[in-house]
Every structure is written in C-alpha cells, then in structure tokens.
Image (cartoon, rainbow, N blue to C red; front, top):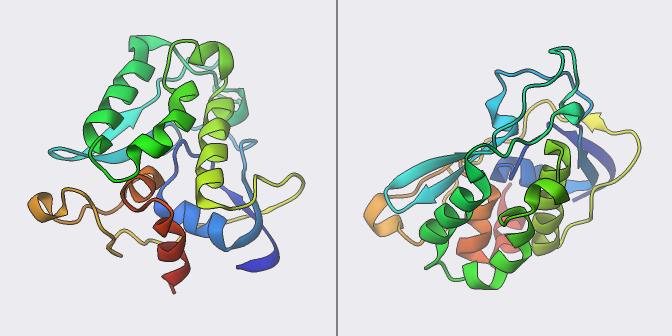
Length: 197
C-alpha cells in the first residue's frame, strides 16, 4: 500500500479486479464522477461475471440525459426491463455454488431488489453503494473526499489466475468484475491482491 497517495478512479459499476487492485494499493481513493458523459463508454454502467457458460455482461440501463454536455454524475438510472431482477438471478445462477456467495449476497441485495430506483436514482449513487460494500468486504478504506489524482489506467491483471468454481470445465476466465474474485475467494481475496507484484 502507498500511504499518502490519493487515487482517482474512472467511474465504474462493480469495477474490475484491476480497479480494485488500485483501491487496495492506494492510501486513499474514490471514483471520479465529475467527468464528461460519453454514451460510448458502456464500461461505466456494465460489468462482467462468469456465468455457467462463460463470460456474461450485465448492464444497468441509463436514462437519456437532458443534454449530451453533462457529467457522469448527472446520469440517472433507468427502470427499463426490471434489470435488478435480471442481475440478481444472473448472480445467483453464476455464483450460487461458489464458496462465499451466501455469506456476501445479502450486502448487495439493496442494489438488486425492488425499490432500487428510489434508493439509488443516479448511476453514481448505485455505483457508490456497490463500491462501498465491495470495499467493506475487501477490508479497504471507504472512498476519500477531496482532490485526487486521476489514475490513467488500472493495471491489467486479467491473466493472473485465482480459483474459479467452474475453472476445470471452462478454464480460467479473466477480465471480470471484482465480484468474481470475492465470491470465489472470500477473505482470501485480500491475500491474492497483496501477492500481486
């Protein structure tokens, strides 16, 4: 870890393992939402998991902003397609048999059940709730306030393997959300992050 370092991360919903490696190593960090909105940046409201058949992407739909010259912090979540139910079922199907799913899923249910739109109307609110729970499970500091230095790009750790529940059948699937690491390794995720050079 680098005490005194204040890292700003690009806005992401359920960020990748590389992003959370930055969080792990930083003295203080937070996602920076006051960046210009770009509808082509789907990674801001999309994340990947390992389903029973392989990689699967889950997307939270967003409402069309009033103007294209807005910031990501101005973007609202859309209720299109009851996405929270789709996401909850997808996570249960993908990770229900992993060692730590049953211990961790309750902390994520406020972001995956009816009423989520009232609790987290803005994409930054929803992502902040996910980020807070992920940080709690990883045992890292909550997001900092104040000025941060924007991290250009998190380290690519997609090829660094860890135990995955379907690895024997599907092979290792890299480039996933940090949720995959948490549900598969639980508290050992801290040891894994610590071991990355």
